[in-house]
Image (cartoon, rainbow, N blue to C red; front, top):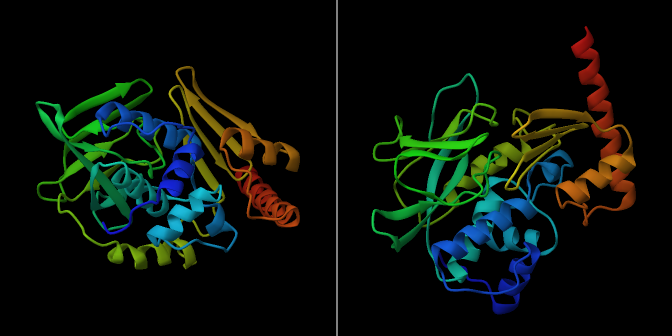
Length: 290
């Protein structure tokens, strides 16, 4: 990992996620950073939907966040790994693969996985899973020790991977965005193999994100998803869906719920994006009624 944040970048990154003080690289601080990251930086496909996908070059991912934006797994986990490295953590990159519902497990490098070595944090655990780039993001680091973690409705089960020898698998609670994700144990020294995967996701008409305006966010009590005009909130009381009907409400939900004010889009571009989102939503409603 040959990229390190400058001191001004480090302080700006931490400020972006609501942290003011740099602390020793402990498990407690790691938990604080991960929680802040998933609260303030949504997983999203906004730039892909807009036809302006950002590169997954590490420096560009960092600048994306410092400039008030966010991205999806390659941007979020890439930048997060550099943040942790710059704070003194030993961070490793892993190839991984997300299993959509109805499909088979896989490790296909369509997801960038992270782990952190903390040999002094727990006598029984050396490596911890940190992942701020999943749609169903764990709210805090998970020990690489098989078992079930979290509390309902946000539980995560860690088990051996059936498709990556020596690897591990993370399964979400039943209402998560996918079946789970598998990680290979090998430590990578470059993100090069992820570049064509990102190009497919961000440019191909066959990409699941090609026409998807989608944001996902987590905090301690709930997960929130905005898919087009539909806001989905999941907490202990269940799942609630709300239809966003006006541009003003849509813009406010983006800014207030997802910390996404679309700062690098003009007001005209935001309204054009809303028009596309609304048109796709109306078409979806027609198909539901047919």
